[in-house]
Length: 231
Image (tube, rainbow, N blue to C red; front, top):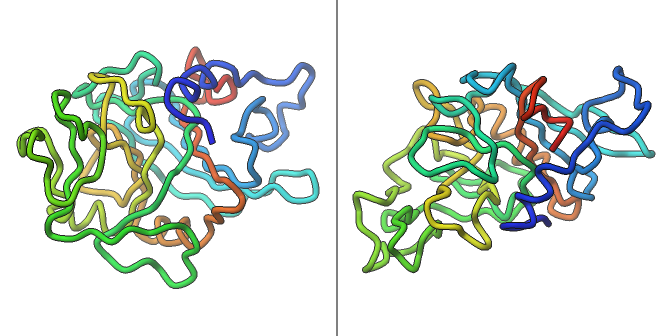
């Protein structure tokens, strides 16, 4: 799994293979997919887009095959390069990231094999840059983590009905870069920086995800400096 600064460096290393056929499946046009046999791609038309497509893929017999797809939403201010993204900018970080574990207010969908952590009334995600618990789940809220700088997870009953933690700034947090980036269920509109999909798609993703296949999430645009084929 790519973590912390390693993920940020890897985010700039995914290049289109020389001579690679443009009609090949998207993962086949990426130089780095996390070295697993499952991949989720989240693609926006351009950096300012607030919507796009999430697709999940399986690698079998040396080929990438699409397993599912759904409309996606991104940050209210679009996408930003993960290595330089700043907190509270309402941007979704581009790059390639692991998915440490899943969580939710609802019970895990039947067939879920991924580690799934239930949300309780005292479950918090700390986003306070001054806290030792920065970008961590705590129960209860850490004493040095201000409530105004935290998410009370159970308060987001729609969005966090089902979710997966995205390994953006997670294992080796850089303060000020951002906290609490997830793949979760759609709310009423664009996100604050996460990637979201309809509830039925999130349930499908949780049933599909195989921890032994080391699924990763790649986020990027169709073209330009943040094109997903460059991550």
